[in-house]
Length: 208
Length: 110
Image (cartoon, rainbow over the protein chains, first blue to last red):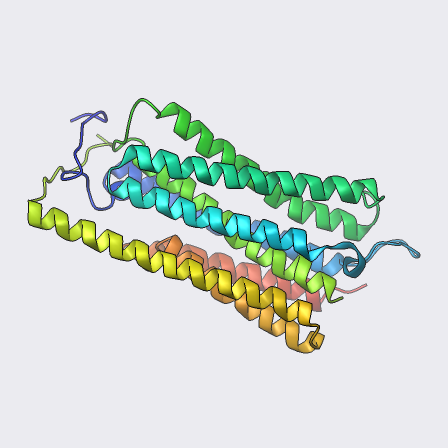
């Protein structure tokens, strides 16, 4: 049996992501990565909390006066919806419906791009009004935390696009099913981190 | 070989059953999504309503925690079988994360 073994919806396994040894290894290794990422983000959150509103005396920017909730609310809804669309993609992956999976992944990518566009707009706006990376300890901590999350969004999007293009003509098999599954786990994790960013940075920021 | 999988062709009845089970699970996920949207709305409204800071902060942190649990257990299937090691990894990570944040907001000051 080789990796190009053809399947039908009837013969497609219940858990294609862990049906092979390769898949099992990827699955466990990827969750270990996510646990490590949790710690990475925790250190950035801790740094941010310690340095919030700190900087040279007389600095003009503070969290309460800087953040705008409507934009953050839109970004939150977009990212949360993209999390659902990737659940739909995995639903179709498990039903061995390659076309539907690709379509839902495409929607996920579109939503992710919109999110990233809004984040770039937001950062550009801050830099424009003088709140750059080197403005204060606060600004450095803010851009490092939120920027690292943005970089994860960018990586997640590139990963989805690469998988979709690479496997466009191949269809689903035991070789790529775990890959699609892990990319979607990564995407959910990005949303998990964002939940804490909108809560700790933006919501707790505007109330001072 | 590492990519070998046991191929089992389901009977029609078996196939209909797993298909229905997956559709039910998807409906559950849709309900989870509705709850997440609702939690997010509450968090934003609480802040917009301008309650006391000492009331808002615990509420929105609790809402965030609930939303993360939903995301992990339903969207990321941590409630499914074979996720024992996964839970061990994630809870270890969260423990270290908690200690790190606690340290930076309490022991360190300037």
